[in-house]
Length: 341
Image 1: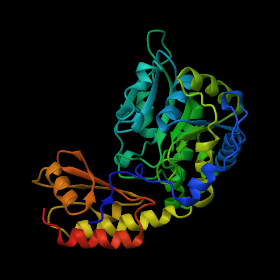
Image 2: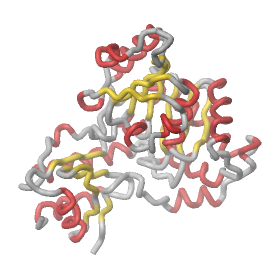
Image 3: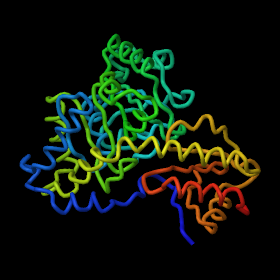
């Protein structure tokens, strides 16, 4: 029986073309900034996001931690949506390492606005932690892969400038936001000071993320990366996978979104899954299991060929990705239509 893994878009495997690019990559010592493939990847990422420079980091978590360390810092506060990845799934690094206090703000569908942010700005009093940074997540994982409207990003930037705040975007799935909104990455990232995007999720690379920003910021980010143990040597072997992903796997993200919508509609037709398929806008599906333990349904689906994960006692997450084809999606729908759960 074939198994369809919908636990995350991090489970993807590099295909033959990507593996070939990795095997043939020119390499050097990246700590000396002498790896030509890493340098090419960084230049490509900067160009795509419209930033002056970029840095190849080992993970999205590192890519989010460094700008918090540099642009917020010890004894200061950052504003973030309450279910944001940086405060829920990155081992409290914002406090444990960056020394910053996260102020977690609930927002509908994970989308912050100036009206939600404004009450949490600290006054400039010596005994108050200063508010220094706004962290946005686009797409927002825990909210169901939701996408920031460009108009909202512009409003937040204007608000941040008026308050003297920096903006970091956790764009782990930035190119999913691009595919869903039709707005290019440069236009989205113009509303931020720094942005991180992952190569190892929907883009299908085995490891790595890109941190992009002004040249002076990236110079300091390189130092902090080294402090965190992220200095890499002949990293061109993995950077080549990122270059291949950016060249070949961006436009196809729209297929993942269509597959997710197809699966969501099938789930909505069952008696054990509760969701509104119209709210599925990218590759992430959350659905409730009213009156049932999500863990039990996860186990049952696994026995029938669908791997997933319980995100709450009565909630399950499915994520589509490059290794789930349209044909696979049709098979998943058939399983869901006849599933005994």
